Amino acid sequence: MCSWSDVLDFDRVARSCGTPVYLFSPEQLRRHVRAYSGLVGSTSRITYPIKANPTLPVLRCLVEMGVGVDCATPQELALARAAGFEETATFYNSPALDMPVATDLVRRGGTVVVNSPEQLRHLADHVHRAEASSVFVRWNPGLHPVGSGGSIQAHGTRHSQFGMDSETVLETLAESKVPIRGIHTHVGSQTHDLAVFDDALEGLHQLVDRIHDCTRQRITTLNLGGGLAGPSTDRGGGPDIADLVRTLRSRLRADLSYHVEPGNSLVGACMGLLTRVVAVDDNGTHRWGIIDVGSNQLLRSTILHSPHPVMDRNHRLLSTDGRDALAGPLCFAGDLVLPRTSLESVRPGDPLFVQHCGAYCQALGNHFNGYLAPATVALGEDGEFVMVSTSEPPWLDPARTTYVWSNDQPHYDTPRSFRPTESTVDHREWHLHHARQISANTFSYELDLPENPVRTITFYDIITELVRISLARLRPGSPNEAGLHHLVTRHHTSQPTDGEHVTSHVGLGPTNDGLIPFHLTIGDLVTAHGTATTSTS
Image 1 (cartoon, rainbow, N blue to C red):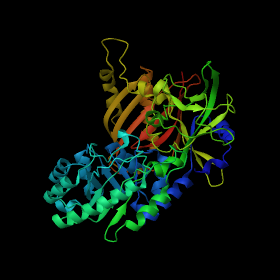
Image 2: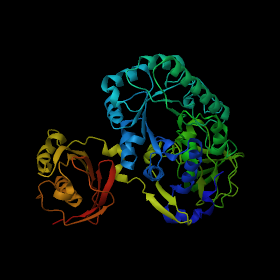
Image 3: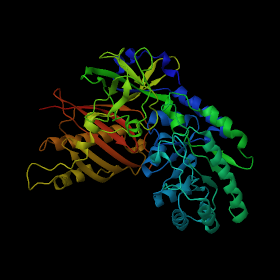
Image 4: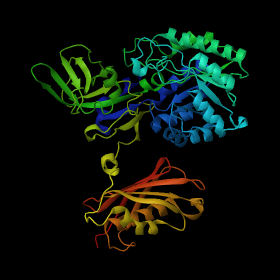
């Protein structure tokens, strides 16, 4: 059981940051990275599956330690680049590869993992042999680990959609027009049985020997995948990273290099969710504790019926037995955090700490009942905490920002009414791709900067121009120059590079005091936000 949260005063954090809020220990994550490097020899041979926790505080910490990244979609690849992962440290692995994206990554020195003969043939059609510096094939070991969370987490069974069996791998590699550098496998998730990893490693070694005997391919690297269970399902009683390292290290071969791809066991215990009890009610059958977060952030445990350990304000674990229950705030009977517990020591207003929320909580977060994603607070080595990501702003509510709003006048449609504005936005310093009003007071602009904005235009100029145009849209008939008196901006990333494709989202929400908050996104990272002060004259 991780003890990094022992130094925290849950009441103090709740008062300072509000609830719910994620608490993150970068140092615990670093310890896990160092532990895995003891197996494969280097942090660069740890490949983090970005789907486990795609938040920038986690990703930036891993980048700083030299960890690689595994992505399954173009969107995850874009996020990895934004976080700072080098393309040469990037794996792209999906049963639904975007072939132009895969081709581009291979040409840039990244690694593509193909799951089927068809994928490899399509890749070979787009990439010359000399360009394919790093292509892996995924081997399905045909294993069904006990305790892997059922079929939805058993990625390595012969019935799953991932990878090829041994005979298909051999046939595919014998016919391949491109060199295959490595073999990838993944036994499944939340696996407690270390013998399964041992069996998979032995199977990989046997497959490599057959490949070398039967084909011209020469395998140099094995990616062992991930799958080791985090401590959330059995309160720390299962094997840990050190146990896995001891089991496998002596079995590694000198003629091969190895990668691992841990998700749950790497990040799961590095983060928890601080919540607050909003009510304790007795309905005659159960005493119910209701907290301010549930399946909107803890969906994985709801699906898998695998409750997280929960601490009270004094760091004592709540029981997993008793006549009481702890539930989230959602209008959903399955929103149970602890289906059975004792609430003798719990009172309304108390903070509670849901442990081991670092993996597949934020990643599976949703907006059920209109709830937005919580903020994240990082714990420093001195025991102090700092906000590293804010909660989602209400104006980003997807139900409103994705709706195509029509004009009140039936004959007057929004796209047509926006065309004059598009010509206004098309500036000599940039080229406009589109300008759309995506809600009553939210506008989306997509544009290219053909030259380095350091020489020609600053972020301040871009924001000023877009906010000015947007304000004119909110108040039709007012001169473009009117309405913007002052702009407050905060900059915390570098300027875009030459020719970078820029997507800008300016959100406007008039308030009673005349302040109009805005939010601008450049590329993949939030780069500026603030308020525009307007005059009603």
